[in-house]
Image (cartoon, rainbow, N blue to C red; front, side):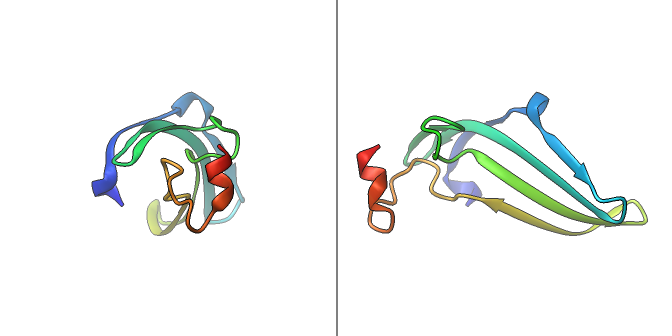
Length: 88
């Protein structure tokens, strides 16, 4: 996935952290940039790419596991599987 990104900027001031009180930390955020298939910006359009969520499991101040959730179709070009993207 990383090789398809030409440029990316995360919106750090708007990160939202959720702490479980245990060993799980969740961080959600947004980004904008340029994918090899075209540019994207979170919220443009509202359903578009750019939003993501990471879930960390931390023990002894070290990350034990991380799960990264995002839409890999950054440029909204996957119209074969998601025909509503053509209506853009």
